[in-house]
Amino acid sequence: MECPYCKQEMERGYIQCRDGITWTPKKQPVKALSFLAKGAVSLCNDGTTSSSTVIAYHCKNCKLVLISYQDA
Ligand SMILES: [Zn+2]
View (tube, rainbow, N blue to C red):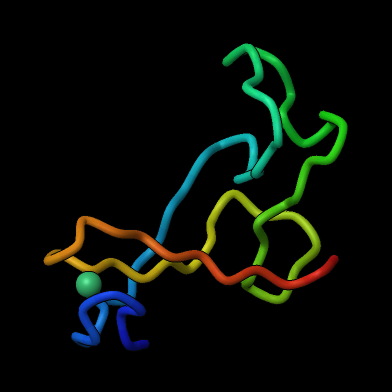
């Protein structure tokens, strides 16, 4: 994947979290189950509906990590 900012090739890797990786519109207490939050988006891209691992692309130049997710 090409970095949208500097156009260099991004490095493919993973982000992992035991309780799943979730984007939420509001900050959650760390101990809360963030996937239950209102407006939560489960960042899942390995073909399952819930995962503790997502594929992510890293640009060292821009200090940027991109996660492209699938709708569950
Ligand atoms: Zn970049």
